[in-house]
Length: 461
Image 1 (cartoon, one colour):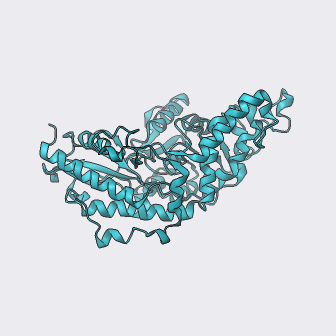
Image 2 (tube, rainbow, N blue to C red):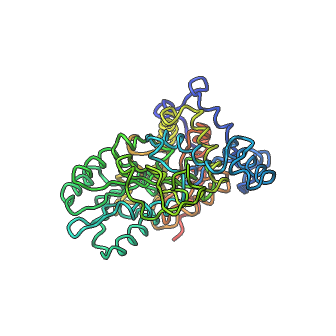
Image 3 (spheres, rainbow, N blue to C red):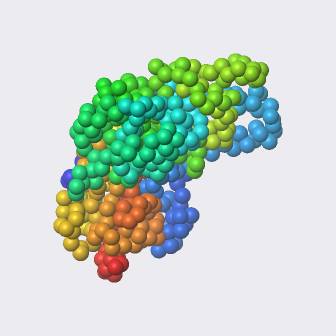
C-alpha cells in the first residue's frame, strides 16, 4: 500500500493551515452507494465517494441547487412576470448580468469583455465566423493535434466553408517519444509560418494530457506575427489563473460544467477583447441588441458594445443561475489565487504519492520499445506545476494490453471516480474547492489495490 513519504508530506496541509477545506461543505458529493461502489463494506455506503472527476463534470454546489429551486418557484408563482418582477431581484431579462462580473474576475477581463451564453462549440463557431478572416496569403489555422473533437470539427468546417482544404490546418504534434508540446516548438512554428497563419487556436489546458499551454507567451508571439489568437478554455477556466485582457488575447470560449460546477451541458461563455468592442456582428440575435430598447422590438439591430453584443437568444435561466451559484462560491473562497494555491498542493500530493507507489514507472521508461510486460502506471501530464492544472493523466502499462479498463472498473467498484480516455489513460483531478488530502490518499490507495488485482490476474491480451 502507498505510504506518506517525506517527499509527499510537504504538500499536505494541516487543518489550521488549510482555510479552504471548509468549502467542501458547499457541495453535494455523491455517496458510495449512489455511485454503485459494490465492493465496499456496508458501513461505507452512505459516505461520500472519492470524486476525482471534476475535470469532466464538477459536483453540485448547494448554492446552485438553492438558486435553481428558487427559480422554479418563481416560474410556478409568477409565470412570465418573472422577466420583470422577481421576488429575489433577479429579473430574468437581465439574468446573465449577474454572472458577467463574476466570470470577468475568473478569466481576468473587464465586465464588458465577457458574455454568459451558448455552448462551447456554438460559441467557438461564432467566434471563428468573426475572427477567422483568411486571405490568399494568410489563411492557415495553427492548433494542437488531437484537440478535443469540438475544436477539430469546428476548425475543419470553418476551413472548408472558406474554400480551403485540410492543408490550411497546421496541427502540432509532440516530439517523438513525448506526450506534450514544447512551448519552444510552438513559438518556432509561429515564427516560421506566421505570415501565412490567420488564426492561432489552442486549448488553455489540453484535455487528454492535462498540459497547460503558455498562454501569455504564445499569444504575444502570435500577435507579433499579425495573427489573431484565440483559446478554448474548457479545461482552464476555474482551474488555472487567467488574465485574458492583460495577455492581449483576442477571443476565448469555454464551458462551465467542469471546474465551474454548473451542471451537465450547462450554459457556456465567451470573451472578446475590448479592442473588438465594435466589431460587426455576423450572426446577430435579439439578446445582443441594446437592452434599453430590446423590448421595443426595433427593426434595426443596435448591438451592445463588447462581448455581450454577440448574444443571440435569451439565456436559460435555470442554467444561468446554476453557474451563478458556483461562481458565488468561488467569490466567497477569495478567487483564483487561493484556489490555485491549494490546487498546487493537492495535485503535487497526488503526484508524490504516485511516485512512491511500487507500480510507478518513470515517464522516460514508459515509451515505445523500453516498455516491459510489468503492470504499471506513469504520468503523462507535465511534471512542472506551472505547466498543468488540477488534472493528472495516468498512462497504464503495458499500453495496448487492456490494463486501463480493468483498473477503471476496480476503482469504480471501490468508490473512486475518475474518467478514461481510450485506450490507456485515466484522468484524476483533485479539485481544490471540494476535494481533500484524504481523497488523494484514498485515491492512490485504491489505485494500488486495483493494480495489484490486475497484476494477479495479468493484463488482458
